[in-house]
Image (cartoon, rainbow, N blue to C red; front, side):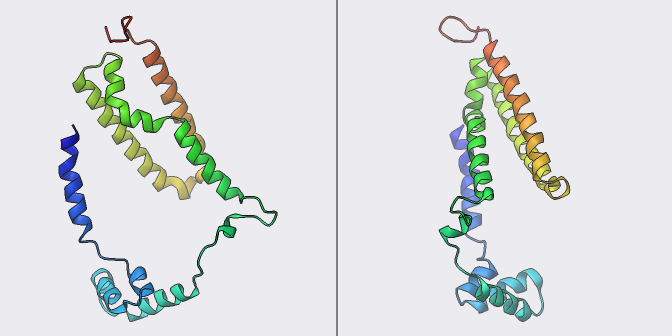
Length: 177
């Protein structure tokens, strides 16, 4: 199973070497001729105006500080707490465990190896599809409704998994029967 991931990883790694630096990075590093080449490939035509715009943006930018995360009263800004909460919430729901041990878990409750791998692929596909749907609708519906809907979906899914794993037919040693 591990070796099946090697060819795509090698391909991705080799392809990543061909990706040019972003024009913004190149301008910030005083490599404007290279930035012009990249922009010409993307936009075509005269790119000097775009380079001047990028240069102006880079000059106006200031380096972020840790104090940017603090409110006037000294506590963390609410957006920081939201970010921390979402990260903790993601870990607490156990999705990383489900993805990592998915095929082992499904085999433990009696599915064949073929079916457990199929379920694992379906789980990954659903994850990708729901992520794309959320990206498409976040501006239309807002973050909070999508967060609530996603939380409801996770609750139902994890409840279903708990039921399946709790009622799996196993022998005294915990092996599927």
